[in-house]
Length: 235
Image (cartoon, rainbow, N blue to C red; front, side, top):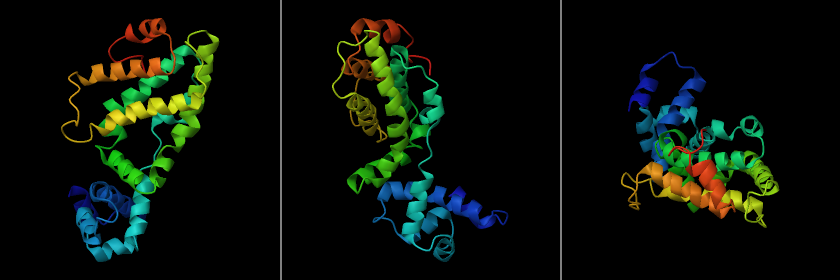
């Protein structure tokens, strides 16, 4: 692999740069076979180095695995707190947040899921102790959900909801589940479900479904979302 070859041949990389290069080169291996299903030999091969050199940078397979998980937890820009806090709680913001979440997860797989690696790591975590997913979702819990709830209250105050939900925090998570549940079925090269519509149409339908589910009035959805382009509200 090119990344491993770069490690082997370059004498200019610092210790930390070499560690980072190794971490990047083994992500796909761990994502494909999991911690228990991966050998040190396979990891060294992916990095293009010997097992002895691998252990120089990571004394155990577990230390490399934990470093790889930690490096995968970078917060996406759209979940950064100062970006979200700049949004005025309102019906428009509520629609924008739902559209951005669903669109980002389903449209930007190569960016957000790193060509499926992050998603596969998340699925493996859910089948294990869930610790990685909890850490992965911390920015969503701390930032997105809080602003979502404020916007839901803003929409209710404006009379734009059919009724105010009894558990607004659950509404935020249900929107997330719509997006992530759809994304799971796109992990295979051929989607597990043939939705028989183009991706942009699927995203539109999912966003409208989520907006109806959180209680937004139909006329508001048509006016503020469906009347716009097929990409939804400008992100």
